[in-house]
View 1 (cartoon, rainbow, N blue to C red):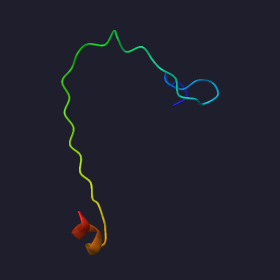
View 2 (cartoon, rainbow, N blue to C red):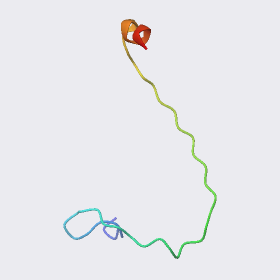
View 3 (cartoon, rainbow, N blue to C red):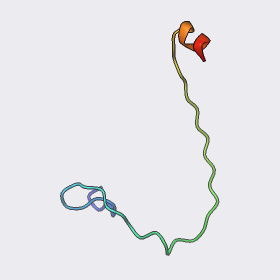
Length: 44
């Protein structure tokens, strides 16, 4: 993976031009968890 278009020679992230790409429809699903003490939850 040495040919990434969004990383320069020093390994820094750089902006890439994506304006020529076709429009597509994408969906994503995410989940998460929040852990806290019962006292913290009761304060909300």
